Length: 170
Image 1 (cartoon, rainbow, N blue to C red):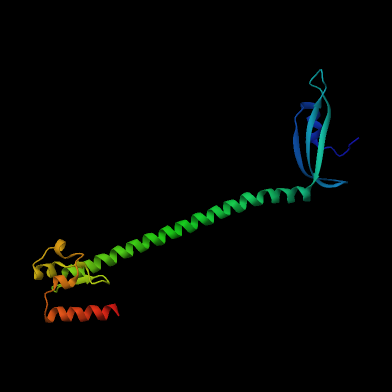
Image 2 (cartoon, rainbow, N blue to C red; image 1 turned 180 degrees about the horizontal axis):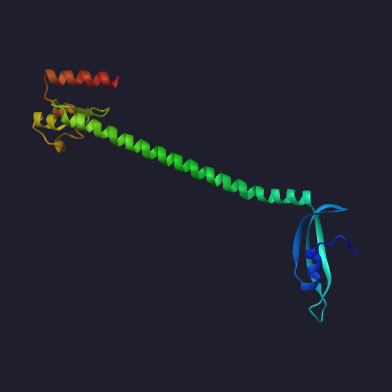
């Protein structure tokens, strides 16, 4: 006869409920226990309780192992989301800084009383400001993508531009 039965175990004999309890201490150690009633075949009377004990330390270790993967997975997902957020934030900040820089550049170039021309490494026009277009008497469509040598007439100014382009490309 089991003399260290808890009140819940004793009441389960009366009401037929299954339950778990623990950790509890008895002469065999500290355990978690699970109980289910066994009913008489022809009635609802509890004739016995089937129980199983698991050592409390083993139970805690098993729970820790089972929790490890979901916790680490959640942690990794949080870290990935935070990394993604930081990258998105840096990209947004870079985009804002670039737009600001472009606006400053554009206002400097467009507001300049001088002819401002930008060429690619092959000497083709990438952009020209309004003053430059007015000075040359051309439209942007007539200039962009064309070699500067086709736009600048031969002479001293084209020689100066040739030398400036060579110095930049070195």
